[in-house]
Amino acid sequence: MTTDNDTRDTTGTQTTAAGALLAMLHAHPDLPTGNVRLELLQADDRRSFEWGITVRHHDALDAFEQWRAALGFDPDRVALTCDDFVNWLEVKGTWCGVPVEIIGYFTSADPESGL
Image 1 (cartoon, rainbow, N blue to C red):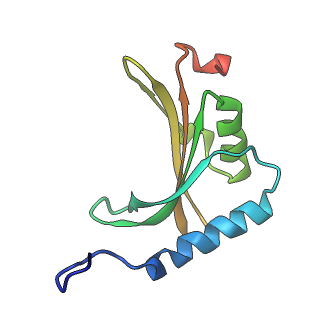
Image 2 (image 1 turned 90 degrees about the horizontal axis):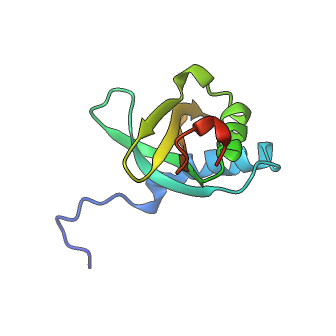
């Protein structure tokens, strides 16, 4: 239901991110399939959000690394987060002017194992 005071974005606000995603898929057709979504991501100014691309991989750190390398994101910017139940690697960058985050979830205590 839409009301007069509804402030949600329209699909038109996603066109830049969608276009970047299409360009990304055409430029790298051999990358492993991940869970790819258009999402509102925090902008570099950390005060606003903009439409971007999130690519998630579960128990496939080799796929995470292939995406990171293909998009040219600096390996030194990969962050490791360890939790009680799940761990993940995350790297953020920009591709075609659109924010992108790649996340690789894993349950192993050793991210080098790739499990």
